[in-house]
Length: 145
Length: 109
Ligand SMILES: Nc1ncnc2c1ncn2[C@@H]1O[C@H](COP(=O)(O)OP(=O)(O)O)[C@@H](O)[C@H]1O
Ligand SMILES: [Mg+2]
Image (cartoon, rainbow over all chains, first blue to last red):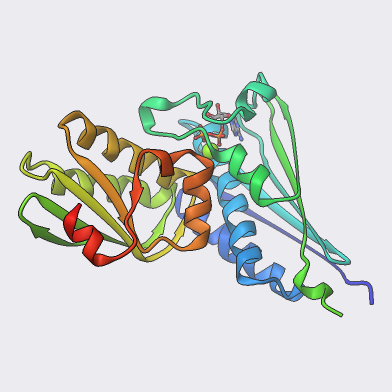
């Protein structure tokens, strides 16, 4: 049986909405019957992307963050988007331990966490216009014959 | 306030709830308050009640580790779940912060 579903939610770039985004994605992903480990992976990856939109994208300002998710078969696709400052050098931003804000005790591990916990990660950005992070994960639990 | 137990120069702090960027400021401030006493030589972080942590938590723990290291002290962790252990491993934290297996070992650290 093929499953298809989609959702989209938009919220203000407040730190309080980091946990909101985690709860939303967990509730949406539940229909794929993920394991607790898979749910934790997805929540953590979303937390990283949303935190980046809030901390880096809208640094010193406020704006809207969009979280989109789609289910196709056993694959969960997640998009986190902001209309913030954007990223000038994406490969460098994605290097483990790279952070533009070491003085804020950022670890520079956000993209590495997304990469490790999801099957695929794709970052698009336009300086001055915003950033879109797309992540994909195949949820295997629902696959058990 | 974070639950904590002081035994001599050893301080055990029980983290609770979620350690993300949003909560990091409060947790950082409370931990710094607790380790402000230079008599604290060993800081043990108990993860038993921590429901969630992401890379913002790594930043908080690394910052406290540096403070303890600079005074010649130690940091250890207990009761890590598999998910947090993975984040620890990924960021190389497991090479500088020891995971203590049981309360006895923690008591000797
Ligand atoms: N949405 C975003 N908008 C602008 N810059 C970003 C965004 N996401 C990430 N970055 C840049 O990429 C760097 C690395 O991100 P990350 O790996 O999550 O580490 P950290 O958040 O700890 O700095 C950030 O320090 C920032 O410079
Ligand atoms: Mg980050």
